[in-house]
Image (cartoon, rainbow, N blue to C red):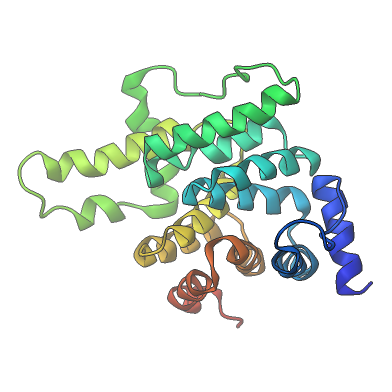
Length: 253
């Protein structure tokens, strides 16, 4: 199958439409875009359509590119993602991109769900029912993967912040989000890697979470595949930055 046929096949699978022809105001650009993302990248590496769309949804949420997010929420459903999986991928972006951008992405996501007749709100996925459990449950997930890295790094903070900042991270990132059902830990960590890569300027966190993603069962090939898949949305420089900072973790033996 040649590149044009691959592009057509993937466009049909994800969007139930034909690949770009000569229609519209910028057909040449759309042909380049679709050929690269859907004809080349989507046929390189082991990730299936479902996981690729969760990666794409994560990156588009991070970048707050809402028209494209809307299209890919629908593509995610077409690829076999459940509404809960899509919602969890969007929700867990909040500690990294802030609540306002995440709220905008949630609104865009819900527009698609409503158009598809999906009943809202979706079923609850929280597993931490009491506020006083947030830290302990968060540490149960955080410690085996990341140890006391954050607490050790910020002992220099003045006054109560030396204790509060690491605790906030544990309670929010792990206690509020990572404990939720709907996505397993392996998937969550892989999506966080591409989230951080797409942010730019988060090289320390990218390397840390690549190590974490490996520790919870992702392969080096899966991590590289996810980063390469994200490149059409976040840009080639951010791909190279993430690969360079993680080279010692991702290089072949």
